[in-house]
Image 1 (cartoon, one colour):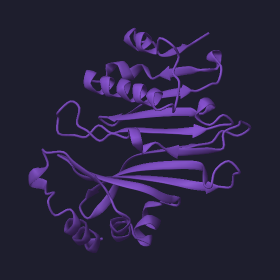
Image 2: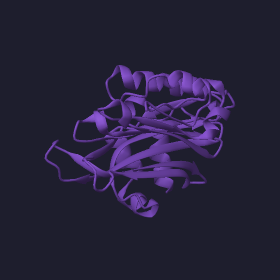
Image 3: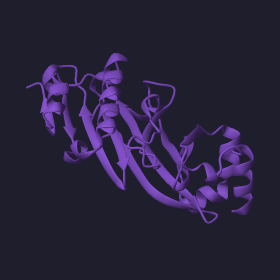
Image 4: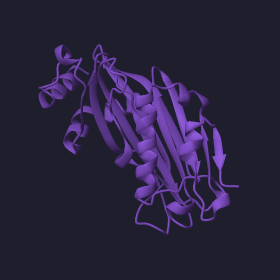
Length: 229
């Protein structure tokens, strides 16, 4: 593990604990991934799916790594499809990786879903409440028979050791679309709530999902379930 520390700080030489109050982040290159997350390290951490991307960030707690993995499956719709994805957040402490949190999801059986993937276009690493600790926002989704039109979307917010989620079901028809918001979402700092609403707006603008009409007012009213019935 000591060799990992040496390699790590060779390519992140501008990041030190003395700068820990300044949030820094980056996406690791394939070379950096292979240098830090060797086969032995992946075995020890039980990372058994293929690595899609890894992001490193530093906050006042220390250096962290968010590892996004996917498990491939056969399909006719795309060149590559994935039946399961898993994400991890590790803190590098005392020459060892400590698991902070993890999530796992998969395409639902007996549905038209054929792939699930990390939506890193909407992934955010930021310290929204300015306490020196990063508050990651992770987004992923599925595709169904009508592509994104009938897939699912999940937005996960990690704040002070808790996972808070927004779950959305797309649908071709109005009455098929519905959204569920964890009650604790409305207790989050307003900066985080605003960022999540911006992500939802961007998802709609990019045609990756359609949220129920009036979702903005529903969230303003702190509703936990809303649809278009």
